[in-house]
Every structure is written in C-alpha cells, then in structure tokens.
Image 1 (cartoon, helix red, strand yellow):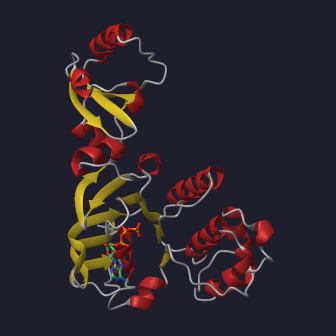
Image 2 (image 1 turned 45 degrees about the vertical axis):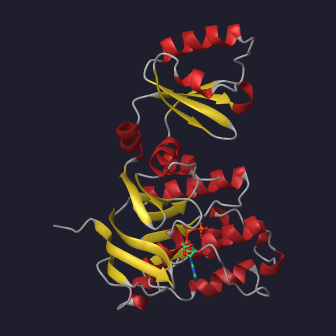
Image 3 (image 1 turned 180 degrees about the vertical axis):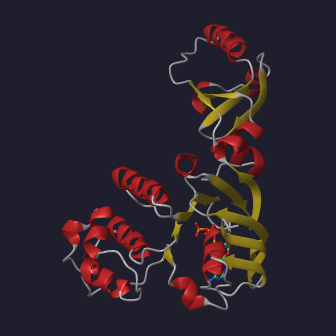
Length: 307
Ligand SMILES: Nc1ncnc2c1ncn2[C@@H]1O[C@H](COP(=O)(O)OP(=O)(O)OP(=O)(O)O)[C@@H](O)[C@H]1O
C-alpha cells in the first residue's frame, strides 16, 4: 500500500542552551493536505520547521520526510521540497527575476520564473533589484522561491505576516491551488482565522509543546458546544454579573472585550437585554459568533495567541 504519510515526526526535541524551544513533539502529515502549525511568537514553530527540513540539528527524536531522514539525505530531500523561512538572506544586487533563476538552477525539475512571478504577484517587479523591494514584496518573493522547484512538500513559515490584506488573500489562493494540485503544504501561522480557512488539520503549539491536534472543526466542536457573545470591555464594569446570566457557562475577560460562552443563546440574550435596559447600555457593538480556533487556544493556553 502506498504510504500516505509524507512526514512523520516522533519525539522531536531541540534546545538552545537553556531554552527548550521544542520539547518532544510528535505528529504526522498526510500527502496532499494543508497542515498548520499554530502558535504564538516563540512557541517553537520555526525551530520545528528548521529541524524537520534539516537546516538545524535536532537534539532528539525522529524525522522522516518523504521517507528519508533529512539529516542523512539532506540534498535528496531538499530537491523534493520547497522551503520559505521568515528570515531571507538574498543577494540585494540581483533582480527579482535573476534571484528566481538562481534558485531555480538548484532544481532539475522546476517551474518557469514568469509563472512564479505571476503567482506571487511580482511580474511588474521582475527587473527590480531585491534591495528595492518592500517587506511584503520580499515576503512574496521568498514564497516564490519555495515554489520554484515544484516540490512535493512546501514549507511556509509565517508566509502572510506583514502582508497587506489583498496579498494575504492572494497567498491563500496560492496555498489552496497547491493543494488542488496534490501538493502537501506545511504552514506555520499565528493567524488562527487563516488556519481555519486553509488547513485540513492543525497542531497548536505553545511553549515548545503541542497542546491540541486535529481538524479545526473537530477541535472547536470538542472544546465548545457554545456560542460566543463578545461585549466591548468599556461597556461593562461588572463581569461577575454577566457571568451569572442564564445559559452562560464560561466567561473570558481581557483588556479589549468580555466573551460570554453560552449554550442557550436566547435565554442569555433576553437576560442581557433586560440587564442592558436597566443600566441604560446600548448593545450595538455586541457580537454573537460561533466559537473559533482563537477560543480553543484561549481555553487551552489561558491567553490569546497575540497579546
Ligand atoms: N538560534 C537561536 N538561539 C537561541 N535561542 C533561539 C534561537 N532560535 C530560537 N530561539 C528561541 O527558541 C524559542 C522558540 O523560537 P522559534 O523561533 O522556534 O518560535 P516561533 O514559534 O517560530 O516564533 P516566531 O513566530 O516569533 O518566530 C524562543 O524562545 C526563541 O527565543
């Protein structure tokens, strides 16, 4: 039977001196899926990616990427994957097109530079020097470089951070089209909405450990049967009163907003309306929504992913 696991990670550990960046994580990635590694800054995502693709030495654990240990078969593995990292060291005096040509030359099988330029929206910048690119354009070029070798598994480390909303959406389209073409995408992000839209499965990472793993919908359903009601923080002083409203079984409270989780939206809302009326509060800015991965992270980690 064909092996559908393109990546197997088992007990992976990596420390930098006293900092335990990755503390023994295990997961598998299946062929053709978009797999998301989610977590706040410093969770250990980049270290995980770098250890998987063989850019840094792991301390302990097993990694099998396309059936090979990248530590032992680095160049063979590298010829079959594409990697975009957060820090890009490119040649500032080369043009965008030349940079793609240079990186493309490492691969026997490669896509055309113009196809890549079109995909990442940099056709008009083909003749511009790399040093003249904006942060967002550099990011898009680095994604293009990960795609030029037509790899089977594409690693994208925070590909959308620092991008404007339009470029972000374009990148989502690219990721979805990669999946359509049977590629496997390994994505790290701290945008949970992005993960929910794009990823077939996600691993949520915090302090070097995986604290949840599964399909976004399953994780949400596992942790929440409730709807969330968000109330701007400035509107209410008395959180205890809100938490005692009928139907409410949990409350989270931060600087920006209070979130009530209720299994009985109607009862909670009716009670909230009469509470608001008594206190002469307008409910205009109150939002009712389904639970999201943000809520899952908040529940498991005890804080928001971006603070
Ligand atoms: N080369 C290094 N030397 C020392 N410490 C490091 C090094 N690289 C990462 N770390 C530390 O390891 C921990 C995990 O960092 P890592 O970059 O893997 O996290 P991350 O989830 O990718 O976060 P970010 O999105 O901010 O990059 C952090 O505490 C970080 O400071």
